[in-house]
Amino acid sequence: MKRHPPPTHQIELRIEALAQLFNSMDPTPFHHRDLDPGAEEFLETWALEYPQDSHFRIIVHIEKMPTEDPAPLVAEAIHNYFEYKSVVTRRSLTVLLLEGRTSLLIGLAFLALCLLGADLLSAFANNAFLRVLKESLVIGGWVAMWRPMQIFLYEWWPLVRRARIYRNLGHASVHVSAVKL
Image 1 (tube, rainbow, N blue to C red):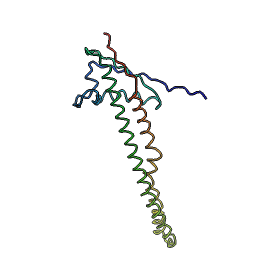
Image 2: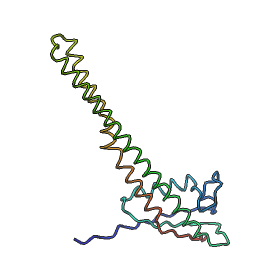
Image 3: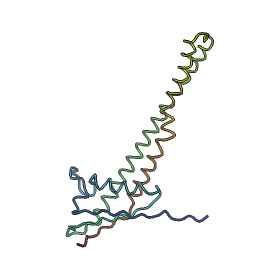
Image 4: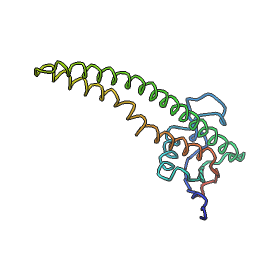
């Protein structure tokens, strides 16, 4: 079976000046700075529309081009920023899975206690109150399993997808061009 290379998608960003690309509240040097929230959201929103194995070409159009070529600075800043976001997202996934395992252990222990209590009550479940209490224990035990099931069925895979998209944005081909008026 012949495997095709992942598609490369182009994302174009137009800014007036280079400073608009960076978060003005961040005092660190350009190549370590956070991207401007608007620029970050724009790039992230477009990238998340594509499959997680996509490659990206980012073209930054600058109206007021600096005298020195900003391409290496822009590329390094975008790569550093999205590599960092990828690492942070993978850490969030690790924390979520740890929470899921802990929740699963707690949920299973609580479920076992509830089922044990329900079994003990079933010997005496000759009146309506004890039958309701028995069923409440069974239901309560299964409700305790809700959070671990939510984590392991639904919450982990969006984080994996985001981490892959961020990693791919961190390896994107970045080009800078002057806007021709």
